[in-house]
Length: 585
Image (cartoon, rainbow, N blue to C red; front, side, top):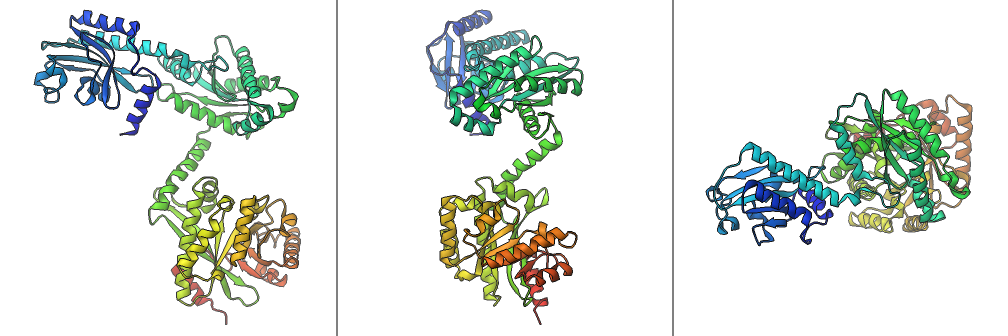
């Protein structure tokens, strides 16, 4: 079943028309159809998954027929009018139940929603072959429109939000479609207002209770209704989220309106306890009525609303560039799932870590690389932070661990005694089986415990949960070294260093790369190395790019260095060549 068909069936069943009692409002239309065309049978039918069910019928006792034998099903599939002058001459229907019951003629027009889903058809049937004129077909189409008006009238209660009494998203779509039929002399905009950041709604409900949020939404709706120009219509779209349409001469005019609207929303009476949570913003999107679906319009307006939270004024115009960035981020998530399953897109490169005392290569950090089939090489700094915030963090780390362990096994077989460093994200620490999976993989490949080091960012280790604490303890108990990555970029370095069960500190490159230019950076790095050594940590400096920096770190007693001065990250074969060429004398 196609996605469109699933959506169509959902739209049909949401209307609650299937298997309902007869209705005079529909029966009047079928009787009219029978009389207008002087035909004995007329019906309003709905195309369910496997049947054609008649909501209204004249001249037949059947309440449904198999979908595979129904002409109305063909109308539904094509969303176009259909005339069959003689069913007996039709290869598709000559053996159908319609012909078996004596029916020879069929004409039907689709019942299509504003969203483009065809629910079924209104049809007329006769016992003798005949033809339909263009005028008759136009009348049948008008009757189909009358049926849809009746369906929409019956579901009109679904266009009002019961909480605020304001029109909802469905009514917005209807009004937008009506507006698109009229030629507007000026530009049309949609303003998307968010009274409370959606991310804060849960906290607000927890502290103040659901009734508070509901009253806040009602108050905001009333205020917007009073603030808008006469004839303006406010739509309630979600928790404390509203929209309205505005016709204006220019972007500047609509921005001024939005700023005034936000100021009005800031004056909401919310109660002292939660006033700080009310931070209204307004996003603006200019419309292309002929080309845009209502869902796309609201998406772009909401995108502008999210951008508005980053501005000083709390108002933002839709930016195609920023939206493209958000779209890219989303597409990246979709495509990364495929990359995990398709060989060739993901691979690891390895950056050497050398001892400052012996110049010996003692380890390598495994770094993930992604070659996108359309975008080419994507920087890990772009895609990894996005992936780590989703459920893809687990399969991402699983892929890296597996690939790194397999490479470590190959190097062990070649007599290369290297410690492989693998990066683990904060979300991975919340997986109760993380350490068990790692140890199982190492045992299956016969890899010594000392061959793997786990790197965790400083931010992942600040305020870590009991589950994360248990996983760290399990790593130490198993004998796997733990390194604190990006050290110095967090907020609680001194406080947590005495508690975190780790053996290695990796000073972030942002400090190392400023050593030559800034005395303060040299002082900070010197203090970090001294403090880490006093607490029993081994120290690695990241981002070393020149000999002067290397020499300075060596003079401070830094244990290891890593960076482009030593080597850039390399594929396995090139890494092996580099090792051979850089054996210490």
